[in-house]
Amino acid sequence: MRSSLLIFAVGCLLATATAQQQESPKSKPEKSRAEQSAAKPAETKPAVSPGTPENPAESPKAEQPEKDEHFDMTEVPPVVTHHQVAVGGQSLKYTATAGHLPIKRGDGKIDAEMFFVAYTLDGQDSARRPITFAFNGGPGSASIWLHMGALGPKRVVLQPGGFMPAAPYRYVDNAYTALDRTDLVLVDAIGTGFSRAASLDISKKFWGVKGDIQGFGEFIRMYLTRYERWASPLYLLGESYGTTRAAGVAGYLADSGISFNGIVLLSTVLNFQSVEFTKTNDEAYILIVPSYTMIAAYHKKLAPELTQDMAKTRAEVEHWAVSDYAQALAKGDAISPDERAKVVDQMARYTGLQKELIDQANLRVDVAKFTHNLLLDQKIRVGRLDGRYSGPDPEGLLDTPFYDPTASAILPPYTSVFNNYVRGELGYKSDMPYKVFAFQSEAEFSNWQWGSADKGFPDTATALRQAMTKNSYLKVLVMEGYYDLATPYFAANFSMDHLELSPTYRANISYATYNAGHMVYVDTDSLAKFKRDLASFVDKTVPRNQQ
Image (cartoon, rainbow, N blue to C red; front, side):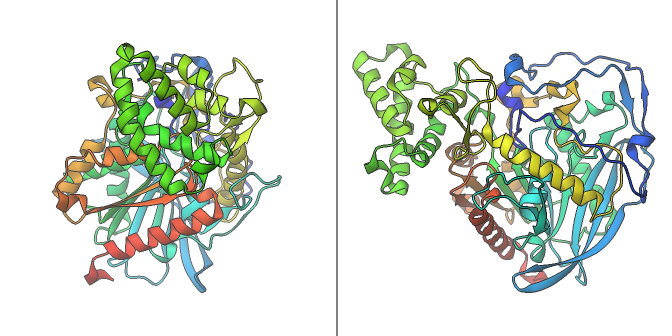
């Protein structure tokens, strides 16, 4: 796979991000991980994998460490604090637990420690109380986004439409937290947040599709064991590459006797063929066109008659994409001049792009070409994670690397607020930097092992199918934003429609759509809908004898 596999979600990446955070502790209820670590010479250097970015302009920049860091894996008790938040007119008292759980080898030696923050509602019967394990994606992103944007009892304050406010940034009570319906466990992948492996060499065990799934699977097993939650209704909620992980974890744990009541897939990518732009894969070009239409309409680049009824226009474009457009691409160089001209005209009408660009792109417009050219006449870019965002490119206008203005708008508020929150209100004191992205300093992380990519494209849709067929009670909710170019909604629908499920099992899949981008919750209206949709899903899937 090429570099686009490494720029997934915000998970997916905010690839321009390089900021790191470090604060001095005021007190030390937990021993500083930075103080526990000691640098030692690296034993091996990683080999270049097929997943390594080939174009430095498209990949996050990271410094090659001169020495392999080693971290003390001694277990330390978590930090427990007590709080309350108002939700739906009620005051909810809850306990927050911030700490690590060990990921052990067969001989009991600790390979890694995964950082988590758990929120549990006080005074509840844990055997009846649902619990949701949630995480963002990347791969290589901490779960700061879901934590402080959607699920947790506190959220980052943005402008109503999700746009960046002026600094200093702050947080408020999250009236839309899911804590009234389910306990929450926000988990950071190894190499992100405060999660670390014992050494850089051991980290590589977890930096791949398979190792990542096994690490999260073991975390869930360990959490259920230590906190005595084996009898609880269980849920997974993943965003972006987190959906790839959630599907894989569900399939992996199905054979370990751990079944889930529900899986929530937010901004879904299960089969990467649906989103990977290559010269031999037309599928991604076909499935992204409806998202181009939605973004072009938002920026007033479509004819007035197309914007009067966007639901009708969206359905029209979906049909055109999988019929006339798909057939034209399938003909390749054999397409006639008249057919080609007709496709160019129609695609320009549906996307707002110049006909010359579409023709020069051989009818195949990837995300970079679209985001860099839609508003070229205004000399600004539009966002990849959220096409409603726009702004000037810091590198100039022409011949520049890929730039997503969404990243510049959301990274600073989330980073600043979380560091303040976790160290202040949650009392987790540590000198260790909270890594929003693993690639901020770990060059080796770019060697992500894509597993099934050697068979074509990375895929965990098969694992999700296995989990669903092994557990006929398992329900899946697919949440998708119309302005998302990282994981287009039509591509997600395509993947779900190709799980080879019978009508009985297909009935276990439901959908929720949003007039939003990749992170649907940054928009206040969409956050409210996100909460309603999630609450309804949990209410419908908790067994009646546990309600």
